[in-house]
Length: 225
Image (cartoon, rainbow, N blue to C red; front, side):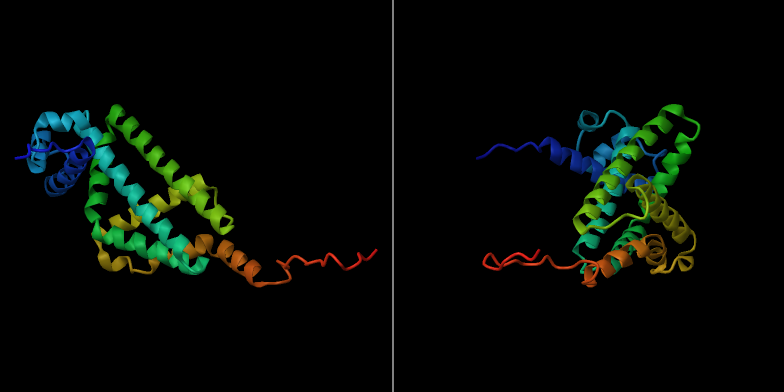
């Protein structure tokens, strides 16, 4: 008979994050105690503290993970598209889907932002985590632009801010009045921002005058002077 296998640190962390999302989403951040998160995860409070030093750290880790996942999925859809225009549509579609499916994330961000407004320590922690998220997104944007030979319409760091602000802001508006935010709205905005850059790349790729094929020289042919 084999003994009981203890979960790995990564598995424990995953259980805590999943439980925290469920409990925070149902009760709100301020009203939730870590003992409730631990109970929902089937763990002790000590196990929670072994992975996260405080409730604030747990909340910030949740939001950081979600923001990175959402943007990575969107950027992956851009890279897999046949052309830049379709890629923009895919990015917008993924962002809109995630935005509507995970409205609770935006409520948690709004609640924590409100909690941090008059708390310097929380505000600094939120600022640091958001900078890390933006840096991650900016690096992904730069890699994507290099891979597609695409010139970004804004510096990657600024574009990352725009993507986060658009998706978060539209999520709030959709949560207030879903009919005010049609599915194609984000795609229209992204096209306005980056459409010219994509169109230039597409034109350059399809124009043989702009991108001539290199002339192949035969070794036996005399060079013209």
